Length: 570
Image 1 (cartoon, helix red, strand yellow):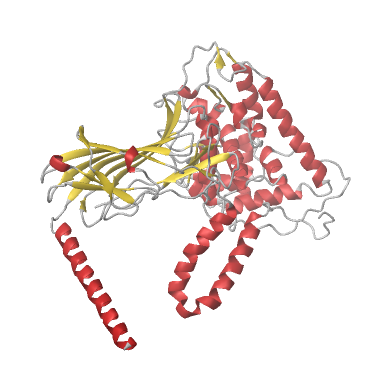
Image 2 (image 1 turned 180 degrees about the vertical axis):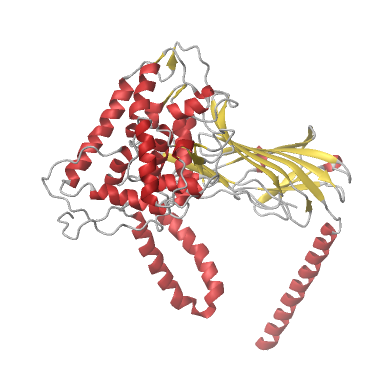
């Protein structure tokens, strides 16, 4: 009797599921039978950071219709915590009031155009606004920064024709400085100020609106009343969840055995990455052997084991400062990847490396400058790769040579005392530059000691103050528009005192040298992945002495932040 009842119950459930399946297929077939086909020539997404860690998102999406009338538009949301009551929409200026939870996109909403559907052959622009909570996260690579990652909504590739322009603009809170806003992974197309707020811009030309275009930005937490905390452990567990899904599909029944092994491997890997960078070889130092003076700024950076991206940047800027190399791009655009070419006077076709070095040193002597031993390899690399951005150069070998040369100079000296000495040199450079309130005097000081100032982790506070932005001499000579204000001083409030110079606008110089340098360093990190730079062999076997982040290849911002992404669309 019980078995019969169970059989009847199972049959009823099976029939119910079959009817639901038929109904679903019928509805879906009806919806797609409308034969949607359209182009998205323009998609603008504006994101405004709010103090409570929410963001105000504004879309302007233009459709060109080639199929059935577009009567509903689906918009993906970053997460499911949205509130339809704070959403609004219009089509070509006509207000729309019917916004519902989407039946096709999750998470997302659908906007009904009602009597304002875009007809076949027609064109229309949808304006849509919403506020999304809990979108700002801690930057796990810099505890003082916040992080935002986002992508515009996208549409079914089977429905979209052609390509268009997708632009993303993220507006910061007032008070955030231009050079404090750092990109993550994808470089800014532009960066400036608008209505006293910094705006970061990414522009994608001739691309289809059928996939995500994720961008990320890091900025100070200043002005935020709430930031969602994300720890390294949180990130590990999120990664583990995704990883487990992938591994589960691969190993199937072996997952119970394989899973603990992968957990152990991941923890060991995370612990290793969390350690302090250590790329110096063992040094034949002598405790109490004295201080090694006379190191260059890049060499001092190596001895202090500062991020290699910063050391590389100082080498490159040094070549530009001494006229050994010059920018190769013709436009001089600040958003363009830094590309160098060797100065004409130092170009040579000599085959032997030592002969090339000797020739260049003779030219340098005539021009009143010097070439350091570690610079030879960089000059050769630049000459051999004309037109290639610095971030694409294979700088690992020249960097290894620099590390080895710097370590060799420490033989017989006290490493700890030498490190303390150069820390004091850096602190003194920052203090002296900060004390110079006259713009011309500060500029002259930075022209001479800027490389030492840049070794400080917070050098931007000296190079960018209010509306004053320092640019090195080689940049000012290449682009006279970058010349700093010729008169006035730097007041206590941070602005240029009595300079008569307005604050930079969005169409002005995209960023200060400090901000541009940070961006450039971030791009250089792709050329120096931590695993690619091998620690040189010990300088001496008788030694008595004893930031590119994770896998993001970007030293300038926090990649290890939670991501808030939109998606989908019919």
